[in-house]
Length: 427
Image (cartoon, rainbow, N blue to C red; front, top):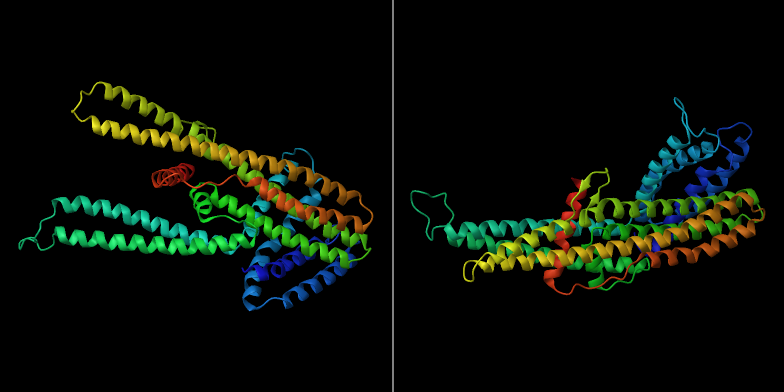
């Protein structure tokens, strides 16, 4: 979705929040139908105004977005309304823990909805092209091996055999295919770079290459997109609160939206920090995985292999095939260097995320406290305005220093390790 339409599109989401949140009381409870009806009438008017600002394409995209988020919001609100009254534990009925588990599942879905943007489509296209390049390179290796033993001319009695020249032609076709894919990736990355600039992420092409080569690159982009969407929603809520005047009841409900948005961002941080700690770092340094199973990481495995190779090299006299072992040692040392660098990057990112989460958690606690105690609607507006700078601050905190690769060899090893980490996480 283009930048010019984001604020208006997200105004619809804000309106939907308002439509489904209503007042503090459950809309289905006795004594509240009139209030609930008035709230829906006001917020439906907001929705109507916002829809009028959208063109056909934007309306279609936004429509898909809010159709997905409505049922989640309704369910989360019902669950949160009853959370305080539930017992801490129960055998046959819902308790606080099981209720919170349901809330977390719905927050997961809300996170996915907030991540919707054109950056996802760009990433999907890039990943498809990268897989095509890897497949083409594997085919090239296969054809090069077969070319060594292929006949120069096709035998009359074996018309099905492929000649050396034919394999050379296949290899050239694959080279052209790879070059075409690489050029397409370059163009898509330029578009992605511009899209990220629109949401406040100014990355050089080299920094973007580095970010996309990491196993959490997509996560970092998703969090940034979510922050931008939340910021836009908050701006719309702020305007609606100002228009509500001194209607404290309505203003408190609008401010309640703000606290829900902060809660969703807090949930995103928890997800990503847990993924780094329990999924990726153990694969690199060893330890227990997400299921508590002990695994030997890439670093200790490579260190063991390197030591064995060096010991073996000592037993080989000069001129007796030492070159192969020396080449293996060089490759193992590179793997070790990249793995340690990768681990350092993940740890830096995790620490930055943790610092940002601490700041967010503090603001979330303040927001919830304010929501429960404030009596003047203008104070709520002021609090929400102060939160606008929070989003930019947190986004800057979560972004580690992105650097360019020292050389092509290092870049390929980094990408190779990323593929290995993703495969390990799926296994």
